[in-house]
Amino acid sequence: MVKLAAIAATPLAVSGQVLGAEAAPAPAGEKLKETDPMAVALGYKEDSTKVDAVKYPQHKPEQVCSGCALYQGKPGDVEAPCTAVGNKIVVGPGWCAVYAPKPPAP
Image (cartoon, rainbow, N blue to C red; front, side):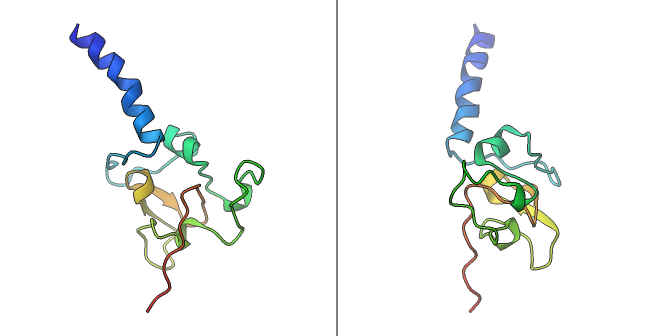
């Protein structure tokens, strides 16, 4: 019975992440792959120029992970953790649907 409960709860946990619940932190240095369920749900691409313009009409060519407020890297970092995907490593020239521009520097 315990096994059945654990199996039944698994889709809820996964769907909760996909639907916007906060993702659990990733092990240090784990890179997000485009095939990861979270990446698929967010339309993540390692190359912003390859984003499906029909599916994501809000995407603009200048929007890249390194310019997003959720990207935890410093200017010039090629890759860094992203809070939108549980701190998995994303690449600077990537993009996903939760892109939010970094606020201007004071």
